[in-house]
Image (cartoon, rainbow, N blue to C red):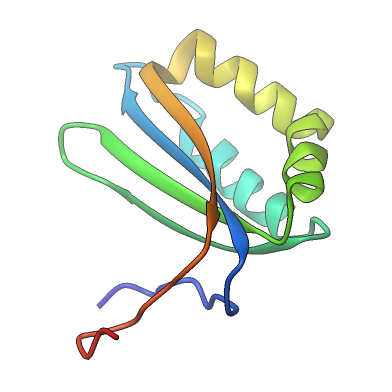
Length: 111
């Protein structure tokens, strides 16, 4: 069973990053580990859920207290280096969406 991010009661924000990996994965795992470590130290960071399938399609959802925390993370210099590397080498395609979480449920009981 995976470890789910421990989340507070809504509202909070989710940054949803879906990607298709390229064939060039050199240095990716190390950078991903560094990003997870740095993000966890950011003010307003709540947690992350992430997965990648055998074909290289992945989804990472990071959770944040507010939009200011997301903006600060986006401007982090080391994160910007990782973004450039991702665009140039590691991702064939990606989408990024930011959403405000209004409700959340856990299960299998659900609501």
